Length: 508
Image (cartoon, helix red, strand yellow):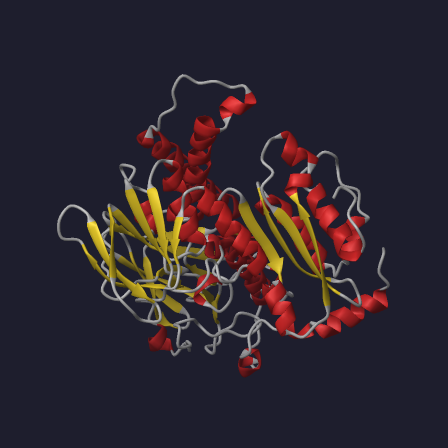
């Protein structure tokens, strides 16, 4: 294509340090993955997976597809983990439903669609969400049957590196034995000192997905992905939303320039932000909730009242009750399980994937972990590059990114170019009257190799994957610029941003 291979090799050398998954990978280099055929006797499973979330169920299916006798243990009684049951899927259902309502109320008339009245039927909205979750959960059970994965419902805990005791929902107990055990127990809501989550007035994301009425005033503690998404849902439905964040910025991992534009967009949607602010205490006496706040750096205290408070300060690995100490599995100070590049712990035959190990706490990252881990167990090669895991905030507009931010590239001391293109100049975005946003591409100056791509736009989560593929193959911005994109499409904005990176765009 446009760039010589020698230039790409040079750029790869500059950023080769990114490709190390964990700094402790050499620590457990003596642990080798082992492949087994279907076994008999006491070790009746080749693979046991503890946890049926995105990482766990994918790992179980992949193991079975590779001919390994596999059992998956899930405590919830419904497969799909937090993501499917009380996370990614139900939140996206409500984000879509609330966006439809918001569009009908505020935008339909300008498109020539007039309605005499528009109102929210919250029970129906929740029922649609629950239906989607139920159908997808049943779908995973069907995939287990298709691939002959044994499904055990119950809370699993280690008896030994090859035995898992399962407390079943009926009150019984069974022991599952296997040669390789994968820990895929995911994460849980991170609590805050002095704040008790009751899932009624003080809620986690789980409670925020099941409110029975639209709160008049909603306070969100934490300006990360989950807090902003759930704030958007209830804000569209009529809540007055205030986001309280200890840090100086929302979504601290986001590219700074895009972040500022994103915050302005949310503020136009009437979302309020109190940054550099600490929650001192929460008082639930009376009908509402009263929060006592103070500046993060210290200072005079103020109060803020709400009907519902959403605690969204992050997530922590869920390993409670697993019995890791019993078998000697090592963890770090954050409670994450330490693994080598093959996802092996310091205990031979015991592996860990997803949110319980270092890396982005994202469902799609856990899925990739699961596949790679099982491939290693089966004697094959697996690979996950955490520098190329896309992230998406599913608000409207969405924000999606992959690779390095401008701040990160600058900190590395690398000479770079930036190319940007606004959706205001994109014909498809203008035609549908949804043109808020920008594409930003960062490329190494000498080689033109793409280092990071950041998109704020409708459906940014769909547009980002061309950039993910480009980064995986070491593409230059010119490679994307010289690739024909259909017209009119939103994806043309990515092409134009690429043109702006190595040369000049056409339509601005």
